Amino acid sequence: MPIQISLLTILDLLRREKSYTILQNHLMVQNASIREALLYIHQHYDEKLSVHEIAGALHISTDHFIRLFKFMLGMTPQKYIQTYRIKQAAAAIRQISDDVPLSISEIAAGIGFSDANYFTRSFKKVMGITPSQYQKMILKN
Image (cartoon, rainbow, N blue to C red; front, side):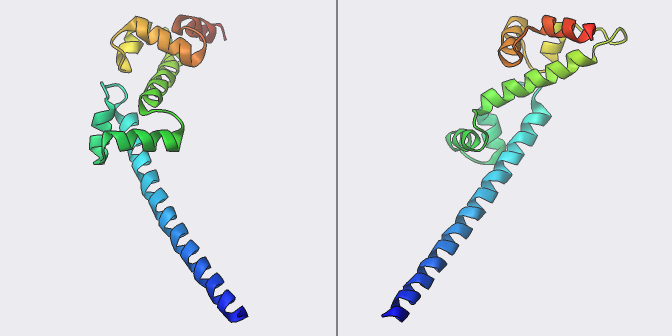
């Protein structure tokens, strides 16, 4: 009887190890897909981006891409794109100097926002203040 229990225990451990390896391989593939998606977004954030286009570039369905992205990063692809664009805008605002006079609307257009008002609302939602307030704060310091 004890030998039979030990054999069953060993078989169970082998089954679990195989399942773990399969799961680990699956997660590695998912991580690679997300890394590719992030690279694509970072290279094309200043263009009009659609979730469908990104999923197509990864050769996966749009629905699967959205689920995978949200599972791995905790937010939708659109939310990530918007947040990334706003962070790029904040970096551009920090770079503004007398030598490079850019308006807020020029920065908005440069990062893929066609509507300056929508950009301002989005910026405030992410950063807590408007782009103009952010610019004044940067210039003060």
